[in-house]
Image (tube, rainbow, N blue to C red; front, side, top):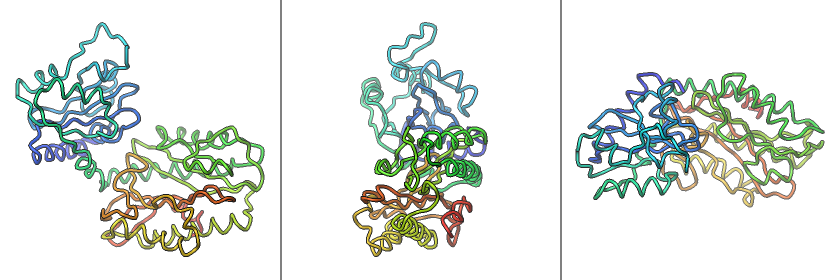
Length: 386
């Protein structure tokens, strides 16, 4: 991920403000290849295989902790070039006899010059391995450890103009990839063949991977909600749960829509498709800054309840997107979070559990403006019939 200097500087300063506000000696931002967002937000980089942490403090320059293989890659890609290797960040039982492997207490002495560490802020506690937490607690004696994950992630809520550009480019890929996926849902082909067509477009257009594994769940397999493609063969008349989420320079897009093999939905399929598209349309029309999560969630919920879908409404319908395809804030039926201008918000209308339509979903994303929202994907809106 190429992170501009001004973005990097502004983000580090905001994290330092959190440290000062909470009287923290440093902030420890955990990340790894599967929980990459918070560390990547600060560095433009993520470790491959090994784990990592970004250390931000008002008492020293930012630096990274990782395994021995992380350093050379970080020098190539990260905005933060200084790295330290620590045992608990390495691949278990891997040996690196030529590398300097330091404990947390040694790293603290090296970077903080003997300063007594009293209070640490942790980011990423939902994915932080117990081994790393235990080593922090045991080596830095009498230290208060504070979970500041939400305070940190609030920094990611509102997107900068540069971030909006990255999301828009991800949606260019999503549109082209999903078109190819739809074209590939043909009787006699396998689910993974359709997924492969979309994923090839993602790589060809400069994408770097997927926000989630490409969803292709045919008929009974759609009950899996986020069902990855399998070797199941498409049959004419079946309805397919399909979703594609490419990433560009760290930022995710999503395109989800039901696809009927052969292109001609039956009466039940047609009713479900039209109703969930209408629910998305009504939500898009209502989406604007100032609404709470529960207020925007109530729009599709009320419509779908009136249409008799209560048994199949197992998920919330609106969430944020960015470095993850689904990230805070989540605007569910109990959410008090307030929609703000310049957020990237997915409308995700999904129903699961019907005997004839085990799973169905339409999803696309909008940028909030001062008075409403604009789509990242006019193509998907047209596809939904808007």
